[in-house]
Image (tube, rainbow, N blue to C red):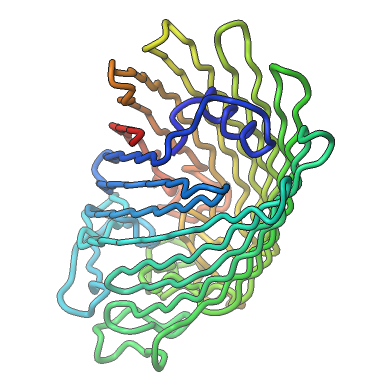
Length: 412
């Protein structure tokens, strides 16, 4: 929860062993975030992050997150010219969608509690070891994890190399059980289900390099390798089977995703002091063996209006290509693919996030921040392969959301 580019630079310099502002023995950061999509998902998040220096270079951290989500979530089914009825994920009851409307499951409700902790120990004057644990729980999903990181300074502490490994074990227990891949959506008693809970294991490995270029410039490069094995299908998502002429949906099937995924990510960062102000620029490239490719550019400029006030505009752009098995719909009579998903999160999209953050430091040194952002997500609403009535439907509706966050940081 870094509050500013200046703080990010000071933190990075601290890791490199460069003198910065004196650190408090204990620092506590809190934040409350609200997220609201137009006619869709609403989210609330509360975060507490506490860091304590025990002396001798030992540092402990505790991070607690509470999320609450509700609203209407796209099921993946296509719109129709007729009224549509869908079985709820639990199998109890149905929901309906009006003609021409995107099918949305309005029973979407979820809460999550996540807790993580870490301890950093100095091995010698230029080497540090950090060990951490993680756990989170929802009504249908739980996750446990552990990570280990090693950092070492070189080149008169102007260069830092870091190695990190993490392992996570997740358990998935969806409402109504796990539907069979490509099972027809029926009531719970008739729809085929898989036995037992689903499980997923993730191994993350990363290599990072941070370099001080001069007194005003810091750059960083980080590579992350991730291997995921196990149940990765979203048990609540559907894919429609449509008539080859009219494009009207004939059936709705539960989606199917591969049970293995290998991901690669490369992140480059630049922090530059410009006069009394700070520029923060980052670029991230992502690719995986599902065929997803994405690029993210994030630009922030902190304008220091005085010793106790800063204003920080931000602009983030995200572009993603679709997964190899992304299908907005399947066609009756055509050969069935091995896997298929109509989840828009696996489709091609462009996201834009402009925002503004204001920070005020009180006389007692406590920092208050207010951040507001506007989120816009667009995709291909009328793909060339749309059949019949689907050519007139919006198959990737634009998503608009407002994000507001209030933060408070105190040193003890």
